[in-house]
Image (cartoon, rainbow, N blue to C red; front, side):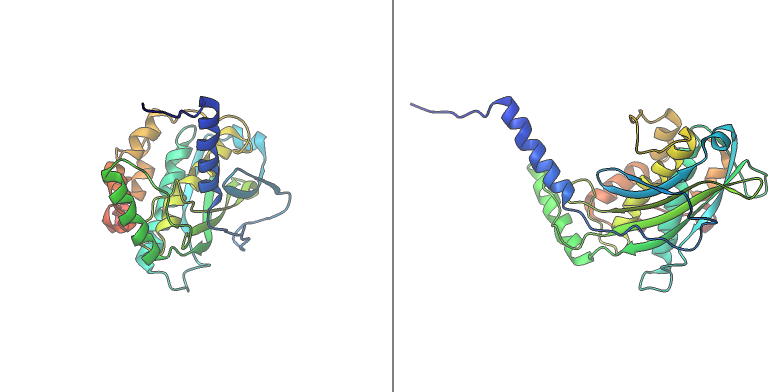
Length: 280
């Protein structure tokens, strides 16, 4: 005689949810770091989501009235004197610009540096929590081993990296129309381990780009309301296709499927991301 035990569906859902929440809560702690690059830090209110810390301000009227936007390349002056490789920092800041350009293209026409724009966007990396490369390598190897038997496992809960950024959108009159302080740490479940000191920061750059661009596209707090399906232009660009506007080509093509495979293998960003078009 054989016996079987089956957990009730509602209990199973609760157990799975508990595991997922536990993994998501095991993330790197990244302070909401205020730099000196914004024209103003006044009037910003706390916001954010489950994984993200944020403070923001958005002047909905002028932002929604704007039709064109120009992106000033992201800087990393606050961390450039550290122990991070210059090429890695360049890949990170360019990934931020690429994500912003793709996200903003959902509503705005993105113009080149020589053209006038209703809004000028500039972001600055204010802090990077380095990824522990040795631990990341161990997690990547373990994930590959588990993938053979189709059993996904979380990363090791140590050595996780993170990213802190601030950004603003300035109108033609020189006044700030929107601003955001943003920080997020890698977590055990959704952030793939990459053997690079900026591996987690690089992976998180797209999340910042999505949040800030959504604030400008919607003219409101991006952490409130429901999320919508990505547009076709965004899907095309994320898969390595040509962006909607020529101005976005300056930031190079997204690694696409090649990048996804590299991330799964734990390879550094430079293995699949060729960076800005000018450097190719």
